[in-house]
Length: 366
Image (tube, rainbow, N blue to C red; front, side):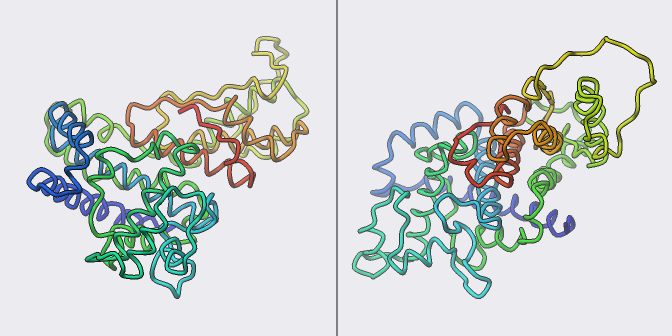
């Protein structure tokens, strides 16, 4: 994984999103258009959020929300996980330029699962309905509809977009300099083979803010605590901790289990016969709680080890991911940004093991 390139992409994306969301907010506040007049409720909600948290906080939240969404969409594109069967931010092939969902719309192919005015879309594309930028206008509608379609699967990240989050979505979504193109170029197909890319991107996204907080040498403000306290735990430390907790507990209950062969960091306990350990009747009773789960690095490895245990116990591959997500893994996190990505990482890990997992609409305990 090219972490240097990912760091540059995440930091540049943050700066671009903050700038573009701020510009969109300025436009919304200072202009009176027919479109805005039809969004009175949304505007009132936006004003309420600004009065409550301040403009800077609202801009920051909208920026990271769209970053998280676009990262998740790109990851699903690269791995063929999109429920609608076509990529949302990526072209169908490297030779093409536009996202597949837009290219297909030009061919008259719009997924039946998307709630969008198809007649309006086609009228914009064929020029019968005037538009300054037909592709951009149509893609915005398709992107928002795709996000709304994912709200049942990922309500913690893709809650239905009918509020100021959509209103402040950057204007440019289809040019070579758009944030969508940045996300596509910044996350290679090769890097997207590893779900850990999600955690790395979060770490890099907040790194500049973290440096700013430390450089100020002042007491850390409440809103800056997440940025100041996030640490990305190295893989070997994660494996060490999970193998000597979850793994150890399982071996205490199943001394003949073969999972010991899969745990290189496992430390053998002294050979003293003891009955003082938590008794388990089933692997479904194991609870792994990360009280500061960040972007879910520990939970993701916990999923991997638990999957091996379930397999050893004779569970079928299609039922294991749902059982792990529902019964075994729990995470707490004060940072909404990280919590969103922890949930996404677990969902993607589960989907990698079962093609039918998304149909179950199982939500992680994070």
